[in-house]
Length: 132
Image 1 (tube, rainbow, N blue to C red):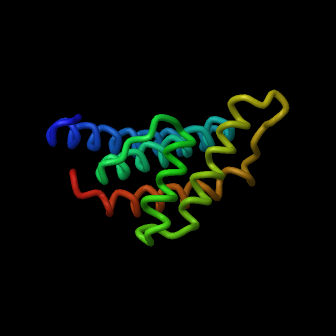
Image 2: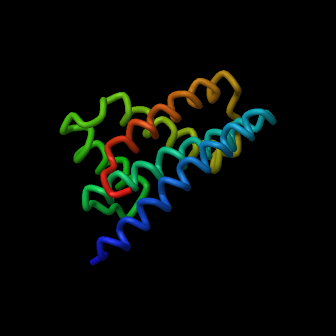
Image 3: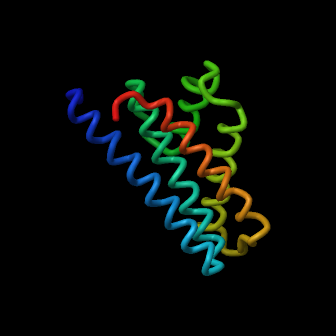
């Protein structure tokens, strides 16, 4: 069981990692590394989702668990729009393909639209976090 201070510290660290990953995504997008950009966008949203879940006293043991619990505990209750769950799931698929599918090579047209969506998503999630 985490103390309140430990929980706050972890949440703060995950928020920082989310924004760092978002900045990394923008930097590699400028270089045209679209698989890596998709990876960093996913992690930006994943870190913020895990921070939001922890803020609500919820901890997932896997990436799939984080996506599921965000949907069940945050989106299903109306705190975030369903499009947020679809975005996180799509970025997860993009990361999986980019990281593990030998024949997949993401394109600018596939990935670039997600940059702004991911940025909005992490800001929306951060606004729901009370332990900052």
